[in-house]
Image (cartoon, rainbow over all chains, first blue to last red):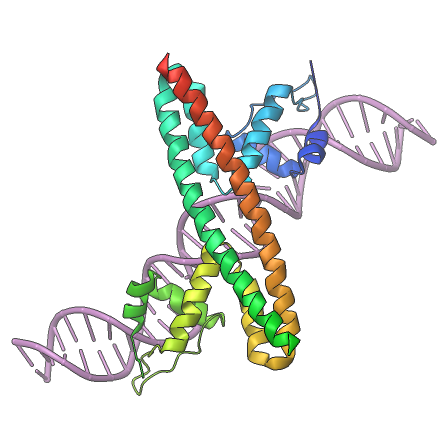
Length: 121
Length: 121
DNA sequence: ATACTACTTAAAGTATACTCTAAGTCAAGC
DNA sequence: GCTTGACTTAGAGTATACTTTAAGTAGTAT
């Protein structure tokens, strides 16, 4: 059984300790088990969840959406359909965002090329 | 010479009128010419700028970065190198973000597929 | 025993980007 | 001439996601 401290989790995933506690308070992760002194001991299941949350947050999924997903998850098997719908919706949102960003990327590239030509004169 | 109102710009680009004024106050667009009654009259140059800002904002470039770029632009030709560097930096940042989002997208897709299999049972 | 460091909590503070409010002006229609 | 509706401003308010603060505890090193 793995038991690692908040410090170690923070280092491993490059997430602020306060952010980890904040995510826990919001119900995105945990509740994390605590030892007799009240210190958090993160286990491998917790780490998987953290990795998922980190990935989704870095992609722009909101705390609220992740909270909702976790809530449904914790409610058990009868929420599978709703969870799936939620994920599919977020997938679509993400797709659109990626599109916007790709458009901006292309525009930036063009602008830079233009500068390069100008600069070369 | 085109002259369109803030209302029309707001409709055309789906940007809140308050946001347009906010962007102007921050120096991202304009200053927009005003008629004798103090009403803004947007011209085609303004619209091009607005389109650029909208595109970059939708891709996540910060107000601060756009402000900096516009500032350099307004300072004249001798800032071209710095502008190019700024754009290239933002391009790299965008690339990374797109990567993160693509990763999350793939992860979501996998999760959904998993649910679909489970659900089919 | 005392100093040091990392942990704990609840709550306040910060950054970013809007978005709304209040008070007022102005042109058009009745 | 008065109402209506869109505009103006400065400044306050909101949402989201942290991040910091203050006050306190617990385990380890000297």
